[in-house]
Length: 268
Image 1 (cartoon, one colour):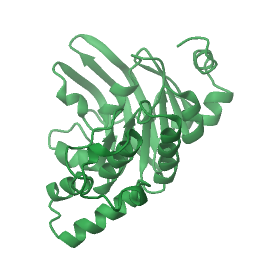
Image 2 (cartoon, one colour):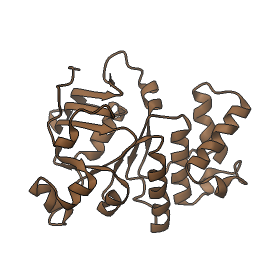
Image 3 (cartoon, one colour):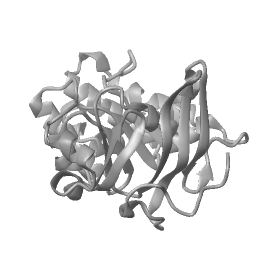
Image 4 (cartoon, helix red, strand yellow):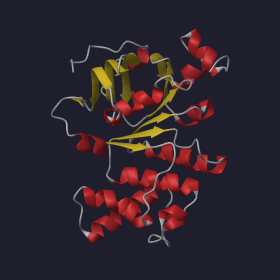
């Protein structure tokens, strides 16, 4: 892909910053001949929570998946422009996609624990990445479950099936599984949309806590959730990045009327 242009085409808050960890310049994605993402340029800052908002089908989840190349799994997808993680062009031919996905973890909309024990849900990925020492694996499993605020709930049932956990517990287990291999980035695609309000609150509290150690990008349809947990918000509409700024500004003093109409409920 081409080298990035000096600055992104969006709002002032997206100017180049030493804290930017994820960067795109004029990123476009096509499904066959249909253009789903249109010239998106953005800098996403390190150790911040960035929310992607917008109506269904606007491209926010598609854009999220560009950062760990999950769109590669879809036939007929073509991407142009520049996409970087930590300054590295992640679409360069020499990039090892497995290693990229170790650096950029993902939590999906619906919890997807493996049909294994709680312990093995975490340990599986560690062993896959070459960690064999039993004591080291045990230590990381405990640390990850503590990090995902679920250790106290599962510590006495580590060798029972993860499928016996509640939906909220399963989602926090999936977050623990994602952080166990210490990625730089956590991508979250509507991680609380299938949860009840109490479980949603626990996941939101967890996200705020995790940004101390990880850069988090979350897709959400819940604008109250975006205001509660995110530092920055990007508003997408029909494949375009309309506005990207500090969350408080996007929701209280947006630069674009289209953003104002969306966050005030006039459309979407």
